[in-house]
Image 1 (cartoon, one colour):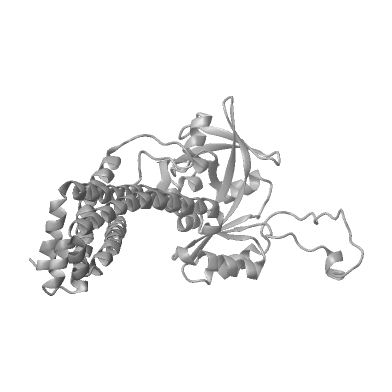
Image 2 (cartoon, rainbow, N blue to C red):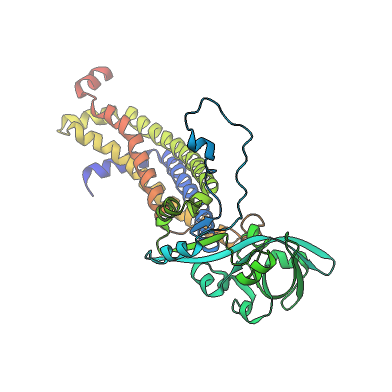
Length: 414
């Protein structure tokens, strides 16, 4: 064993109790970081994955991001007299030139599109009425942009085409209506059109807001029910590279003018909450590590105070300042490494304990327990931060020890 390392370890062994407390502080900081990071990142990754799987990467709506300018404003942009009380022109809803939009999207590599018609309907089954959203789809195109076929817990997506008037219900919708596979329900639209429909499927995405309020039918049936023949009001896109969503959305909106939202824009409020969550988590765990580093600083400072005569002897027999400094920095590094190793074991145990817990969570996202991220990222980050902090905490007293002059120490002792 190198002499410098042997001296550093003997110093720590001399103050065994304080050293163990410092190691425990570092271990707790590392373990809490691993546990909280695993829980937070697991939830966030699961949420984003569910959003990406159940919602389009890009959505084109039959509306404008900003209302069109009035003819008077276009004709006289710098007029001295203003007109008030102007109302937007009454235009039929729906995406005009939808075929041209679909053709343009088809020319984009790695992009799939599905036209839909969305609207509200009232479902009646027996004496129960449930207000839901209905989305008219084409099953062949729907498979390209969503996981609806995989989310079905009863029935098949192709049954929409084989049944006379088929409808697929969310699991929550079916529970509220009391309907099951094969039942006949009555759907009534705001246009006053009523249609008897057969339940051919029930889906569950795990997102309560979707499962409790959404239904699907054939696009042609939805157009008849809404009294909007040959009309679509949404085009949903799925991208091979989800990171291109913002770029594709901007290109489409610039070219055609319709409001086009990427999944990041649609979920930006929730993604912003994730930033706050991470800030709280890192601040809390960092406070634990800082407290542990004060313990290391205290231990090394005490060792320096007690070992001034030893420092004088070391320097008098030829140890340079950097050698003395290295001894005390190694003490902090040893505490950091030992605490990190113990923290890895505690963190692993904490993660496995949380994974063993099973409980039902009902909210925006349904879960059967903690969703955990077991990637090595948390271990690497926690270990690096703890080791660096411990070494830095030892640097200040080590620097002071290195500057002590043996003559001053001997004179002071005399």
